[in-house]
Image: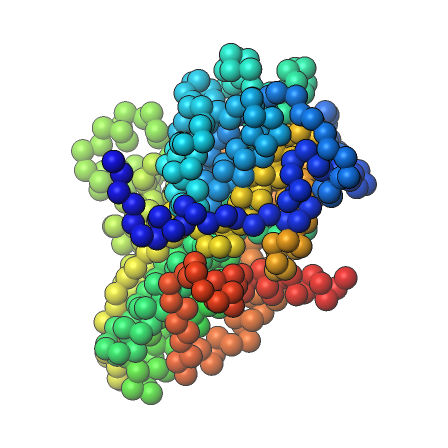
Amino acid sequence: MKTLSPLQQERLKYQPKLPSSLSKGINSLEMIEGEATQSVRDQEQIKELFKNTYGKPVVTFKISDSTQTSAQRNVGVILSGGQAPGGHNVIAGLYDALKQANSSNKLYGFLGGPSGIIDGKYIEFTDEFMDQYRNTGGFDIIGSGRTKLETEEQFQKSLAVCKKLNISAVVIIGGDDSNTNAALLAEWFVKNNTGIQVIGCPKTIDGDLKNDQIEISFGFDTATKTYAELIGNIQRDANSAKKYWHFIKIMGRSASHVALEAALQTQPNITLISEEVEAKKMSLESIVNYMTDIIVRRANMGKNFGIAVIPEGLIEFIPEMKSMISNLNDIMASLETDPSFVNATTIRDKFDIVENRLDEDNAKVYNSLPAIIKGQLLADRDPHGNVQVSKIETEKLLIEMISTRLDELKSQGDYIGKFSAQSHFFGYEGRCAFPSNFDADYCYSLGYNAFALINNGLTGYLSSVRNLTQPASEWIAGGVPLTMMMNMEKRHGEMKPVIQKALVKLDGPVFKQLEANREEWAMNDRYLFPGAIQYFGPSCVCDVTTCTLQLERAKELASV
Ligand code: FBP
């Protein structure tokens, strides 16, 4: 028999909250349609590519006075991409709504991500199975994967599997790429008169799947609180021992929302924001100089310690690196099957092959890097052909370069301190934490609401729950057409329809908060210690949402 930790036992009993519009039951809902919508950009191209699903209205739900009956239906669910706390609760909400609508309904979980629907690998959910996973972190209930779902062959195979299981709707829980695939699949199913609906749910700890209708993706709340706890603990340690600089890289493949939020929760001495680096065209050297300056000034005050937070995606936002990496990505695609590269006996031989193919300026940048980083840049690409930034030790690169710079300054008599650094990478630590009360409620609502969208016959929609800084009872449940979030972007050298990624806005209230305080935080230690996520206790501790959500919502409400 499985043994459960005390917290696990208590969390299994937690009943997630629903918006009051959904709380009377799935068969007592009325759907309100808004105006027709448009894609965020490139309207003509997106409309042409999504002839059947483009332009649909945003919808919201309210309690209906009458009670409907729902016909029997089977639904399939997929977890896609990186883990995010709360994924199990999305499935729990979906399962409960589906069973409430009609107890003969069935939920199938496709195993290992999108490849599960293509290869026909699935399980059928039962009460007993579902109950083991309520309010737990992780995606282990059915597993996840990063297979892209986009070719005609994959769609045909998915259709065959759905037909075999008599599935009439598929829910894809994923980030911007996975929901782009959901939009493509929805369009294909309509175009081919299959009668199968597709609904997405906004997941990613990175927090970059958001827009006017999606206030935050799930998992961001729990993951950032987990990283903030760890940073706070390290700050205490640094402030106690007063002998180390801690360089902490934090997940967030492209956007710096996670680093920014963790910084607002903890107030470290240095926080780099990739979007600012790109906007100010900061070279690697100027980043090193910026950080070195703070280290020197603190040393002059007798403080040879500090905390620097570095976003995971930084390297791709440094202009000269961005150009080199993009050139390298193309080269790596062509070298994948090149025997001279694949069979090269030493890593140095691989460096030579790559350097000879890079454009002159890019080769210089590549060559200037330490061998360990050059090697990491040659690691396998993700399914989208991009460098896996989680594998690049930017924090170590910065430590090495700053160390060299400080030695130079010391030899000139311009630095009197002692620099000893520790590096950390916080990413996987936060992705499977027990979902915070916020994520437990939000995810359950997203899943429940996804079934409401299915039950109302919609396809090509993202489950949307808004008004999130208010108590859950006041949340607004509804759906947003996936095409509304799309634009055309270059992928693998070709223009493709994709959901627009939300990067940190430098004129937004969240970045402004950091900007206004960072000099003070750099010199005068104003560390905050958030501590571990609390699941039971006063609401002001257990139910508080992220600074990002609070600041963005406050600005939005002020402008209404
Ligand atoms: P998603 O965009 O799929 O949610 O993934 C987010 C993320 O956690 C990034 O922060 C990180 O760069 C990446 O996944 C790591 O991926 P992997 O789990 O494949 O190592």
